[in-house]
Length: 295
Image 1: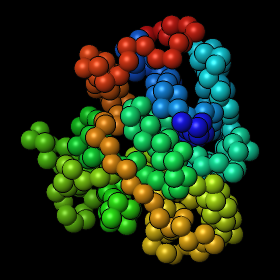
Image 2: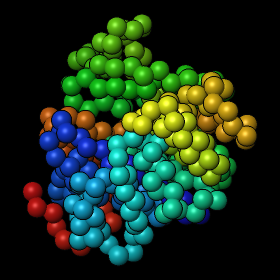
Image 3: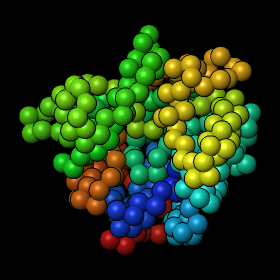
């Protein structure tokens, strides 16, 4: 499999979380979130790993990576100077990758697993076109606190629409519902949801640049999000020169996506990761970390 760059979005401020979320020690051996994510990405064949940070927590993340990660992992950094959304964050990484190659994007606070990341890498290597790796709703919630999930409508294996559903919670009987006032209230556990694991054709750099420029012309504080741009592409509301960019293949995985949203998620996540190791779904050790992490 040819190497494909993975852009990890770690520039979020996470003020309500009360710390640097990508560095939260959640692994069985106290590995940080970003350690687990990067190890899965390397196993899936991604390289280089490009981490987008903000000016405040960026130095901590850089120091952690420099101290802990093995030398044979090709890692690069980019800085998102101002919080103008995830499209702006992705554009911050543009100079760190080959602009003629497809690339993937992932959140720094979600653990997608090597299998799901491998689906993205395989599609980008073989097809080089836009792709979304979708997760089943029942495999994409951790803990009992409400979260937001993008429910996908899929037609002939391609993304037709994304509906942001807020206040999504799981009941003890395995059912799911949303408290955002929209219909339907009950959500199918097998609904496919987006967890922002994307693969993009290289022509998307121009699309992101144009979208950010248009937004900044409308407002100096414009925030542009990846799901919004994807939705506009799919709906035909965003002009593009390359018509194939409107098509997003959806690869549905049965892997579990473990996301960290609230401080109360940490204990639940730690327990779930231990169970994954015990079931053989996750390796006991990551790529060789240079120093043990403190609890």
